[in-house]
Length: 315
Image (cartoon, rainbow, N blue to C red; front, side, top):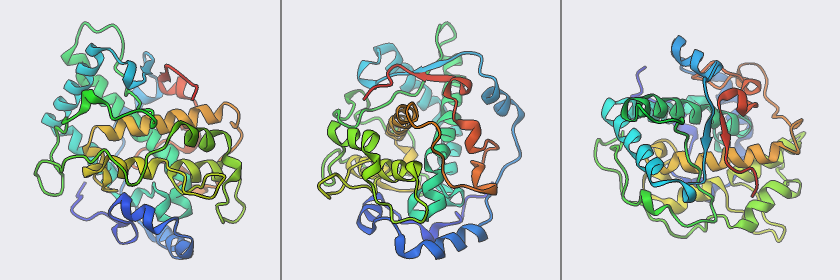
């Protein structure tokens, strides 16, 4: 596909700093809904092998807390990303996220808010399958499948990834800017995560016909408030706190921390679904399909069927 122009750029902030400053776009919802209907989503021809892999995984990959990851797994994860970058596959994956026609962030309106969790789950799966493909080449005797580790937001930045930025900035071809790894804004603490998962009902989204799913995804993406009314740090704030290219709403997957950050979001969604499995987003028609892939929201709920599990489903 030609990614020289990315549909949706005109209605999406460039940085997560701007996303946080502007807040949820309540005043632009009608315009954003209109733009979403007019948007032509680029969809590549299905790759049979990829879809077959996703539909029938041969083994379960366990996604582990990065702080508890063995030295061998840390090395394997880094080496696999380097290999993907050398192949050019990593750039292809980044470009999937650069294409804002996929409407996968709440800053693009209600549809983006409702697609956020499932779209990024499918995106993680694509990355994980590619990691496993090259890891099988690099470690042919490995006895377990490589999974994307997750980063608990209350923990410090993973020291084993310090300075690890093997891919170039897709816009410039140069090395990405260094990370900040510091406030402002603050990243979420353990108490904030408990609010996101267990006190989601306090969120007032201001959206018509809001439901439990709306309130949860509103909070975990980074639009929520604490019980005292102050801003509730979450996804958006983690991107901004890390800084560097992670602060760019389009090219943030260039930083390998993107995958750990979003694996934690996916894990928290899985924890939340244990008690809220009936809650669902208000998506209709093609908005339920997580393009550029063929899977719908409903296809992405059973992580066991998708071929992965988490080593912990507790906060």
